[in-house]
Length: 360
Image 1 (cartoon, helix red, strand yellow):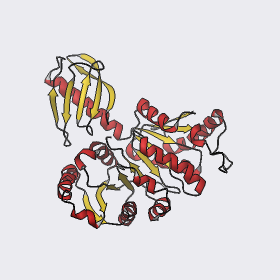
Image 2 (cartoon, one colour):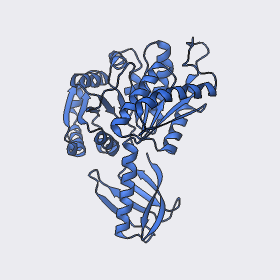
Image 3 (cartoon, helix red, strand yellow):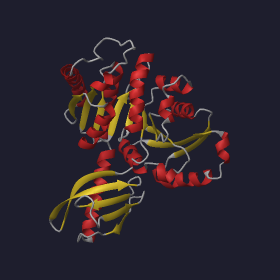
Image 4 (cartoon, one colour):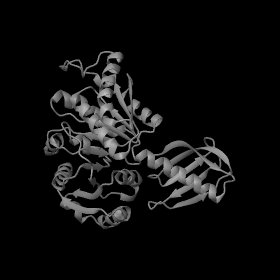
């Protein structure tokens, strides 16, 4: 996945605005003054933060100018994935309110400066044959939605303090499309949503929305289980598979967030015994170490018949405060909404789950 963004930098006392297109897990960058330049600047960044000018392009930029440009790109990405700006989704349920409160407290740990509360009227659509619950969670008009968001904002303002600006936004756009557009416009580094499991109707509505977000949200997505009080994040489990580790792990994005949290890292692989005989496993484990050894994590490799269940059991046993994963096929999240051991663990777990898309 490629991401384009614009930024400014100065060289030879001239302020320049450039379009930067990032690819390959933020290891390669194309820099242009105008879209589709015939001879753009090409830069490469290693996981250790070392920059290389692959192609200087047609612009007369000095070596010092390239250092300034590289620093500006690094600063932009670090601010983005440190969640300086956060988007919190609300359907006006108690689960969503709890997730918003957790987001505010997490924002204090991360140093978040802006938190946007968003409600999409589309989220409230109920199938004709379903029996909808009445109450404040089913807003009828945009004005009612705005009034309810404003009331939530007032409650959160007391918790957040003056250092965090809270804004509200509501419309009738498609939820996923709206989230992705807002994330791009507002430079959102983290989207927060609550996960409900109190009733079959709630699982069908909110569960499917969360699953849809997980498949299509372009930003990291934090899922907060119901009745979960915020706990300072000090220990993070990174659950990963051993398939194309170097290409599929959004290393930079995860590293920035974990560093910002100041948390310890446990790298976990859960697999079946049959997979242990795969000849490619040794090579992938080596790639895993090459990525993460600099963070000085604990490595754990365990067998479990149910990967999701194994992850959640391990995280609970280790006292983890957050589980991070990159659900490449999205079976991870979908399994949380079916009747299984994993579902019971997830819906009753106090551990939030953070999903990164492959390519972030």
